[in-house]
Structures are given as C-alpha cells and as structure tokens.
Length: 317
Length: 317
Image (cartoon, rainbow over all chains, first blue to last red; front, side, top):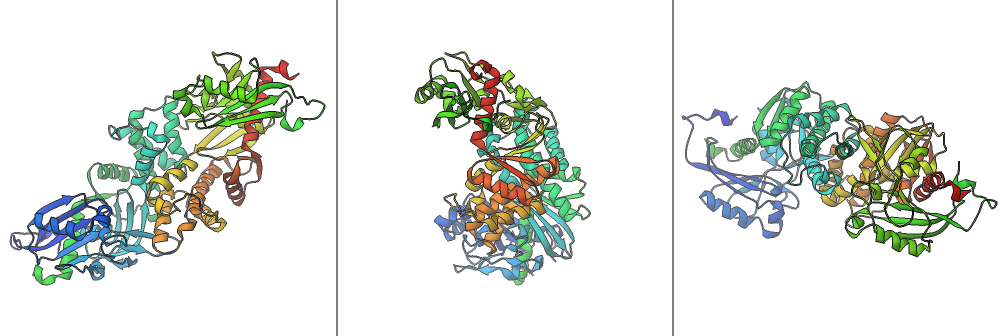
C-alpha cells in the first residue's frame, strides 16, 4: 500500500501521473501529482460547488488544469461536493460499514474530455442516526493504514467523528459546531457578546472556561449560550473573551457528546488545520484523549493518491 | 392581596386608576385599567425598545396615552425592556433571591410629565450561572399567589424557567430556544430542511419524534440538528416535517435540561401564548410535568395591577 511517507529518491519521479482535486462547497484546490505521490504543482480558487452549480464545472476544471500545465490526457481524480446531487455529477454514497480502500470502486466517470472521475461520499443510512459526508472519506483514506482501528475527528463547519475498525468505517456523527459558531455570532443576540470583527484574541483561559462549562453541563448548551450574554451584562465577563468562550462552549459540548458515544479509549487521529486544529487538539487532550494530529490538506491529497493508484495502477508502476 | 379573579360587581368601577404598559424589545402594549383590575381600553404598536432607542420613548408613550383617552394625571406603570440600560431609563435589576411582591420597591420614576414608573428586571448575579430577565418578573408576579412555591416556564425567543419558593424567586435559567429556531431555519444549512415560508403544517408526529430524539440524547443537539438535514437527503424524512421536528429537538433539549436541573416534582405554571404555548404544554406533559397553563398577556397585566396597587394604594381603595 502506498503511503506519502514512503517517498524515497529511488521511487521519485518528476513525471506527472494524475491531477488530484479537492472540490468543496466554496473552494477548489488541485495538485499535479507524480507517480510517487510527490506534489509537483498546486492551484487554488474560490470556485466551489455553489459557484459552479450556476457557472458550470467543466470550464473551471479546464482553467485550473491549464494553470497546472497538465497534459490533456492526464487523468483527474476529484473528491468532495462536486459529487453531490447538486454538484457536477452525482457520485452516489457508499453505505457504512464500508472499507476505505473500496472508495475507488464507487468513483463515477464524468462525461467530458479526458479521464475525470469523482470519488463517492459516505452515508450512514440508518433511520435512527442518518448522516452523510463528502470529502472527509478521502481524508480518512489518506491518514489511515489499511487495517487501522480507532477514532478520527475532523473539525470544521460540520465536524465529523468517525469510528473505524480494521480499515472499515463503522459509524460516524456530524456536529454543526462551526456553523453554530458562525450563525450565533453573526445573527443572534450573541453578536453583542463577541467582538464585531469576528476575530478575538485567542484567550486560552476563556476558551478553557467555556470547555469546562460544557463538560460540566453538556445538556445545557442553549442555556449556557445565553449566559455568555448575561455574564457580560452583569460584569462577570468581557466581550473581548466572548468568541473564545463561545468556541469553548460549542467544541466542549461536541467533545462531551462524542466521548460519551464513542469512548476515549481508542487512539484518536485529529485531521486539523490552522487555529481550529490547535483549539481541538487542546480541547481533546483536556478531555482525556491521546491525540495524533495530521494536516487536513495532506490528508486529502494522500487519500486521492491512494485511490488513484487503485484506479490507474499502471501509471504508478 | 389583589387578584384578577377577585373582580366582583361590588368592587367594580369604570374609573381609570392607572395605565399598564408592557414595553418589549419590539412591541408596545398598554391598557387603561380600572381600580378593580378590569381592562377599560387597549392600544398596541410596534414601537419597541429598538425603535424608541433612536426615535425616543416619551413621544411614543404620549401618543398611546392619547389613544387610550387617559387623563394627563393618570399614573403609568411600565414593565419590560424600556427599563434596560439601552432603554428609556435604566431600572436596575433586583438580585435573586427576591420576593416578587417587592418588585414595586425597585420601580424607577421617569423624569417626564406625570407619574411614570418602570419596574425592574431580575438578575441572578452568580458568576457560575449569570442570568437576567426583564418583563417576565412581572408575569411571575401576575400568575403566582403571595406564598406560591413551584416552577414556572415562560416559552419564547429566550425561554425562562423559574423556581419560586414561598413567593420568592430562588433561581432561574434562560434557554435560547426560540432564537435558535429562528437563526437555524433562516441562516444555517437547515434552511434547506424546513419549508421556505417558515410555516409548516404543525405535524404532531414529527414534533413528538423530535422531542423523543432530544430526550434520548440531550447532549447531542448539534449532532441531531445535522441529522435533520441528512435524514432528508437519505429519504428518511420529509422537508414538510422539518420545522416541527426542529421545534421538537430544541424544545425537547430545553425541557430535558430543565427537568434535570429543577426536577419535575413541583407544580408547573406555563405562561404561554398561541401555538408556542400549545407546543410547550404538549411537550411538558409528555415529559411528566403537571401543567397549569396561564395566558401571557393576562399575566403581564395582572403583575402590573398588583405592583400598581402597592405603589398607588390610595387610588385602589
């Protein structure tokens, strides 16, 4: 099995093998990849699914392939929202439980010039716990060994927690943590409790106080949210600490529920990026998890490379 | 102690005794009241605190007093956000624990023509559970006997739960339930999971399913919210049921936490209005509470009459 860390001079090559694309709701990222998994060139844009649903997907991809200098016959492998029903071509969900190294088998070929394929998302098609992901399954493939067992946490607008056993996704849960932070700080009374520019000093004390409040009362979120406002009205807390405390409340409530549901005994891989990744790492450690942190973009690229090797093996020999 | 239900022909009079005003964030309601608590005339407007903070409070009150045909020397008693720091004149919070029949002692006289006073709100000035109310304290006074002990629930944008012992407010908690419903259905991904006009058929089955989900997993709100969307993507649920289910999740989570915090052994008074009041009544009964329902406007008027009798006793003799 190919792994990004396996790259050595002996296998290395400057010949492009395929183009890896992470096509999200509001972002586009593509990398020209060599057969040994080395990234040769990169391009980024804001032409996500929402933009392309009206403007078209084909022309956006074509422009970015030109920027990468990719040959016309170079295969392209895409993960993310481009495969949603409202995306370019729907790549139907694989249903849990499913092995991550079976993702490539669900790839859909797009009816366009060249060999362009979109990886499927995953669905937990259970009436009691329905859930979906698109894009994160490729990151999971990227950061796990073929027989990995454990938990993975992927923070974000819609945070994902995934339980994997022997390389298969058994169960997962999505938390609207990032989106709750955004809508509450922009559209609710809590807009008066966080700084108007949306960027507070990352006060570790206020963040950890929020975490502690959430852990002590994980059923009380809609009440502890209001207290954020009341505490400032009554002079107990400062607006400058509001965003950090709000983060702590929301992330702490997510972790408390996930811990109760999945347990903290598994090894946990955190697929993080930037400041949010650091906040989760601190919060997870404070909640008793042993955390192994991976970079989110590297995880996407790694998953696309693994799947590409399974689809176009000959190009990687 | 005066009670609205004590009205009899023997005490009845058509002579106006005072004007009762409930001045909220976005609404104004005033009633011309007789000394026996009978309502002689009513006026309503949308000139709430937010409007008057720029347009001025005095002229709005003056216009409404004219509509009521109130004599210039008739005293006026106001409750609600007009007494907030950003209101007309700040009526500083009384701090819990406090007897409800002491509210009148915290009334602030406004420096304007005539005798115009604003009742104070209540603050729970505890660093671990800071909380505030303005307007609800007057409703509490209106619906409780002098030595009442029990719980009161006041649903709304910011739902309140209040524990009262022998006529004194001991503790209370605010839940952002109504505001969460509004911001999630208007500004989050859940806008795709509720009908665009915001008014769904009130499906009792979907509402109770949401309640049951919340009761089974009261720590999982940010996850069960996302499932609302996933369940529709996967064909388990219908968008027409989305708003009822969202109501059930939010109200159910509120009640589960309040029940754990305050217990269900007290008699519970529900100060409700319209459809929201009915939803809460159903949900509270389903959660094992014995519910005694009161009308919200009548509660406000009743509280203002009780406080007015304490302030201007001579006018009520």
